[in-house]
Length: 211
Image 1 (cartoon, one colour):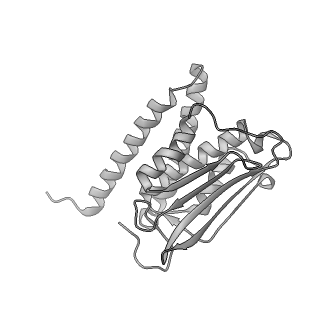
Image 2: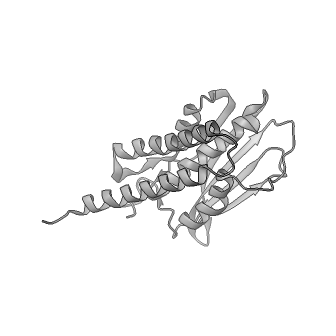
């Protein structure tokens, strides 16, 4: 019995999803002070994956709209629209890139609510992305900037799930270059994805989507 390419791709994505879930379950247990904290963080991370997966299943061949992914995570955490700004050119994420980016957005949102700008009355955040040219090739750059914080923050002595995801997982899985600026007025994170790495980004009208 022959197996078509779509079935093979679906199975590959399913294995990848389970691998991510195992990593989340295992890593979420580190540094938690109680079972309630562990359960809450685990539920939130699985929820972020589920939302991204639901977006992807609408039309797997078209990937996920980056703007929808950003707004979806902020709305899922009940962040009022007046407290954030998300803007950038139309950009679609291929499945292999969407899941880790969805997790990163979730971690940044929760961190801003618990420890950063969204936890303060005058604080807000701005999420922007654009396509920059490097050596004649287009790269996707994302910026997460928190503003209106009254307390300066320093780099933590131990890295939690979110920081490891941004500084280690994204560079390893998607070939991204990441920079976390703790000295800025508010937390500022820059993520740049190369055009020829594992990020798998494309824009409508540029030809066939990557495989």
